[in-house]
Every structure is written in structure tokens, then in C-alpha cells.
Image (cartoon, rainbow, N blue to C red; front, side, top):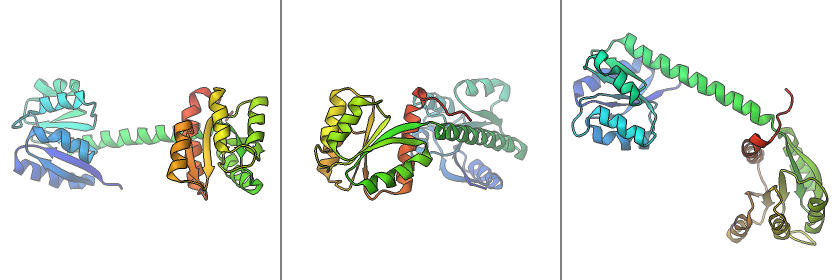
Length: 271
């Protein structure tokens, strides 16, 4: 079971110690204890805890003001207010201010269990959403052409792209040939472009694509990854620069990013 991280915000050290001891039962590790409200915002931004236990009566800045400040910064960590104030009096107030829930002191293990049941339910929902999104992304079909004067490099890249849902229509072995393809056929989603080629180098092809306003993304794939080359191609409009020799993971990440970017305009394959 993965460890859940938490910050406790309470000015009573004996309460912090008691809560910290009980949280261990839920595999929750307290990464910071805070005694006043002013430290809360910075600590949450820096440490990104899974859950924050927040008292209302705090020196310097009370818990309600902390909730207001978090809302202004759109910080929506799992905030649970733990206070001795009457539940009927403040529960609706803190929830309206962005808290996930309210626990009245003295707390019980059953009340703490509600916190972690809620947290685990949200995590499961997020995991399901991520899985569904990943499944949808993998169903997005991309089209492309590979422009490289090395036929073997074209074939190797093609073999890596097709299982990921990027279908290569054809290869071009020179800049001139690439421009001819782009002017006479359907524009692909991606052009995988080498730099050093005969009869028109990679920059010539990129300039042509940009001058014609073609709706294709250019990915430079080259071993010539000098700072000047990377800077020049990115400044000219290349979407990415992949260095040869590349890894399978790099190509997979690249395709996934394009699938996500182009998903709104693409048709999902029939499942």
C-alpha cells in the first residue's frame, strides 16, 4: 500500500502528536507540522501533501482565512478541518470555502477512517479516468511521412511508429522530394524530418511548410543536436527535436503527446 502524506496545522503540540500517532494506522506519514496559519500556503505549494488537517483557531491567520487564501490561489488539496467548534455551526461554512470535510474534536478512529475512505475513493476515480484517457489516446490514429536520406533509418522509425498508432504514408529521401510530396498529397499530421540531406536540407522543408501554412507538425530527428541547430529549428517552428539514436520510450512519449494534442480533431478508431 502506498504511503499517504499529510500536513497537520494546529497550534496545540499535544494534539498534533496525538493525530500523528493515529494517522500511522492509515499508512499516512506526516511530512510537516505547522502551528500558525501563515505558513500553510507556502508549505502546501512546496510539499504537495495528499491531505491537510487544518484547525480553525490559529495564531497569525485563522483556518477560515487560510481556506480563503487557498481558494484564491486555486489550491485544492484535500483539506479537512479538524476543530473543537460545533459542527452545526461551521461545517457548511468550511465546505463552502473549499474544505473536503469537517471533523469535530475530539476525533475518533471512525471519523478518521471517513477521511481516508473519501481519499481512496477519489484516487480510484482518478485512476479510472486516467486509464480511460490512455485507452482513448491509444486509439487516436496519426498520419506521417519520414524524410531521411538513410533508407534504413526510415524503416526503423516506421517500425517503431506503426504499433503506436502513427501510420507512415511514405518516405522521402531528400528535401526536394519531401516538398514535392507535401505539395501533391494530403498533408500528414506529422513530418519526421532529418537535417542533413541532399537536394534541400531539413530547414528548407520546414521553411516550405511554414510558408504554405500547412497544418502539419514537424519533428526534427537528427544526430546533429548542436545548441544552434535545436535553437534554429525550434525558432523556425519545429514542434520537437529528437536526437539520434533515440529510445523506444522517447518515441512512445512523443506519439502520446501528439495523440493528446490532436485528439479533439481526430476520429477514434472503432473499438
